[in-house]
Image (cartoon, rainbow, N blue to C red; front, side, top):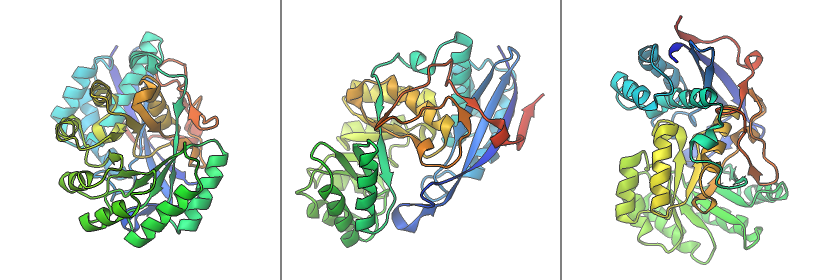
Amino acid sequence: MKITAIRVHQVDLPLKEGRYSWSNGNFVEVFDSTVVAIETDAGLVGYAECCPLGSAYLPSYARGVRAGMEEVAPKLIGLDPTNLGAVNRAMDAALNGHPYVKAPLDIACWDLFGKASDLPLVTLLGGIAQDEVRLYRAISQEAPETMAKKIAGYKAEGYTKFQLKVGGDADDDIARIRACREILDDTDILVADANTGWTRHEAARVADAVADLDVYIEQPCASYDECLSIRRRTAKPFVMDETVTGLEMLVRGLADDAFDVINLKISKVGGITRARTMRDVCVAHGIPMTIEDTWGGDIVTAAIAHLAQATPSDFVFSATDFNSYGTKTIAANAPRRVGGGMKAPMGPGLGVEPDFAVLGAPVLSFGR
């Protein structure tokens, strides 16, 4: 099987809540997502999606996905999409870095691998390891009482894990954490995610002020070394996200005992091929993961579900159903949350079918 053409679509994904806010005053109201279709001479088509969280969260941005396609996609024409090693080597040779650009191309090739094998991706990634994937809900940064009220609403829908967006004023964040922990049951999980927003002294102060609460501290500061400093000052369970950029930083963090949990974002590390390797290293070292991505719709949610459900439950701290945050459906057969969990589609590959009436015509085309 050979790749004959690559089509690139752009779609806006508005939010049900109208706005998603996190540290340092950042917010998004409409997400700009890119959907990739890889066509083959066998008549099979593989799909994937990449949706950066704005342009200030990671060194990635929505238009960058499509700009990077100009460099990478032409080099994949004629390759066998099921030879994932060759595909990734060709992408790395064509573009140094920019893993988020390569991620949807890698994922679309995995979709093709599943379709060619007539197997769901979860099977190719190790097989079903848990009946369902338990989900967290991200709570946009607002006033403490507003965030607590939203948590109460989502708890009623079946969620038991909550990621609180902090990383603002330290006094406000202490109030946010306390207000939200107060309304939760003892068995519920609360993560205070600063998204790199605190300076070291602010992070130390907040961690000390909530020392009596059952709460995880996530990515308090911008740099790895700053986060490691806070990790060594607090007894709270510690999560790293933005600074775990790939296998090298994962190995460094394991050696430094830098975290108890990591956030494994598929597009951040370059796609399923590299995410699977990092997943396996984490399992081997006893490190649970939040398996997710930077954002997205139905196709991103499917990729998350497959990787997460192929991972033993002890090592899936949580995952995300991004398609429940938006107002727009872009693919049929995508995972849907039931209570606080979801399952991967059981069709071949990702098991989803994009709705091109919603996606519209390609904005870029490569190959025939």
